[in-house]
Image 1 (tube, rainbow, N blue to C red):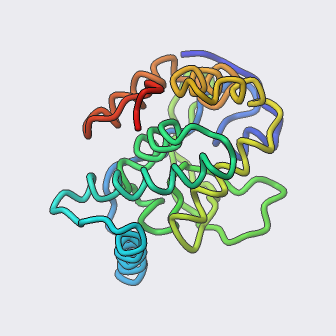
Image 2: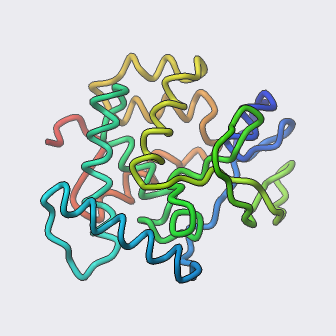
Length: 212
């Protein structure tokens, strides 16, 4: 594991301690969301399938993947982040949309509130790492009205943080773009890039720039 030091604001957003750090491991295990929230997530997925002209399958993970591809392309168009990177991170961080945080709050990237955040929030239990020791604690996460809002906030946060500026030199190289994000402190897992790529390879996509 790698150790990095973050500012208080960056640590809050990334779920990290401000001293010896490992990025928060928001559980991607499926969690039963309250009925109303689960329905809201399902309805949003259906609306996006209709909007994008997609055909729903019996595979819930694949359904999220298909929607994430389209939302990732919107982020790419607006913020210049390779859609493969957006897709890989969304699928990895949210467990293909199955995490409790995503089901309850449309939060696909595990972003916490941060001191400057003024939107809706949700308190959930998460695993934090302090000096290599895993601890469970309650934390405040950003809550969104839709999956699209979560994806767009992700784009806004990356482009608005000078820490990640170097990554944008590799807009045509998704794997290097993600590698630069990790090198800049987005995550401390040295295997993050390979895990992200393995996640989307489930449905035949890679971080190579030849993907259509």
